Amino acid sequence: MTQPEAPAPDAALPVLHALRCAGAVSVARVAAVTGLDPSDAESELIDLGIDGLVTRLPGDPPVWSLTGAGRAAGAERIARELESARARGRVTAAYERFMVLNPELLDLCTAWQLRPVDGVTGVNDHTDAEYDSRVLARFADLDGRAAAVCAELAAALPRFGRYRARLAEALGRAAAGETAYLADNTASYHLVWAELHEDLLVTLGRERW
Image (cartoon, rainbow, N blue to C red):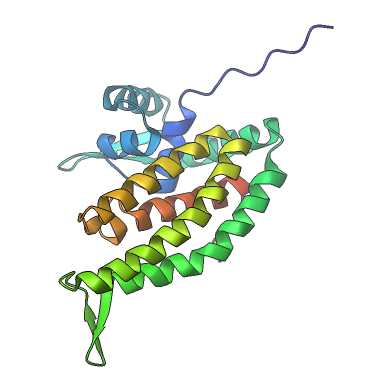
């Protein structure tokens, strides 16, 4: 008996979904989120703009954002992807494990940005190498547990695999001395984590608490 053909991949979905999870962002940011070449990301954005699903906003650099129609279309496509893959149960289980880790991640970001000195908490200027080393070690421990969650998600829906690569890169750069890559730039561990959180909520059709 002939097996039914798998549905063709939705080439625009990664770009549409990137705007849903990351907000109004530049072409370069869309490329970083999706793993696409910037020229391919821009081409997809232009096509989505023609369809009325995204809009280009002026700026330096200009940014792209979803329209109301784009937000609705993205939600519909993500729901269809989840049900087609029969992955709701696996993604839900991974989401619950992610949420166990989420408060720890937020505490670690606070510990990285602030440091107590003589009983007074102030901005961490990263001049205390011993303090930073301790926080980085705790991040590495968390990241090991997060990697297992990301693996479960990628097994359920391959598009989630991109988060593991981005988190590992951010932590590696922070460990190499680029301190902003933990909590203070658009490619930071904290921001990628926040995008993953938003992605899970959107994928499962849940509201943020």
